[in-house]
Length: 375
Ligand code: UDP
Image (cartoon, rainbow, N blue to C red; front, side, top):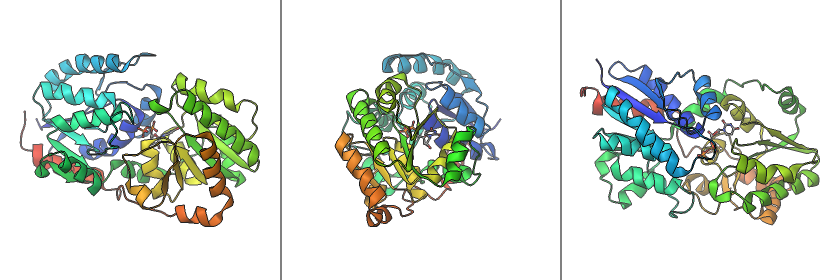
């Protein structure tokens, strides 16, 4: 039997970023792929698997409404262990910085199975923001055997923490592979209202938010800023695919009640979301993945955070950090919608995160590292 590479993932952003790697592993002549979903997210995770035609081999089914971070971590540890014992993979891939990825890395480490960390080396420098992601990725860096850094900056972060240089490889971020695989399909919108909007040629402000550190008052302020912008620019439509988390919805949606030119949707399937991204005039987000994707499409991104572990697109000018202050959000969006010079300065395609071939590079590295090493 060929050595098996197990990929463990549990949330939408992880699913999007591991999908190109799983697809490339399925084509490998030297390695087999085993996939495990934890179910940290449920519908949003299943949506992505369906889109990429991935049927997970194991489903730990840990999702429970209102579960605490410790409950999520405990369940992953407990339920992944027997799967590791049964499958005996040559290595385990974890992606990024979720509770799933940190717990899965620890579970593999406990069984002395090498951990391959995809999207390694991102750092905001503030352990409380993003929370708990900054801690999760640092914890994973302590136990990973192979660190796959998306950029030279993330590699430098790891080296600064004394991670050995020979265990770090810059591969690019697989999110760009996923984006390029998907955006060219120009996926039709399931909701006819979105298709009408796409045809209307109106300016679109695409908004996503979910970060734990923005829950509560900050998100209410964002909601108020959106309502003001909608009134100020009646020719523009705000499109808000609302995260499934009820805490997010309860903070934002009441502020938008009765405002005409706002379309609130369920989370869009990845194909539809990337099409919406390609149609957007401006993107307002606190997402990590969207910060990486939008620059590739030449879209100005205003990031509702105080810091970022993704400084590359800030440096290239496509992304601007603006925080969550209501006045600031209104001002920054207004500038981009009224000042064409300011808009053009940001709306430049930039690809600091990858060239769309990261997954192939990752699998080539894995073939060399684990191909002849059945467990
Ligand atoms: N995304 C999606 N549908 C949506 C909103 C986002 O498919 O309605 C995708 C987006 O393209 C990106 C990823 O989800 O690849 C980002 O997920 P999220 O913002 O939840 O997490 P983060 O990247 O901040 O960890």
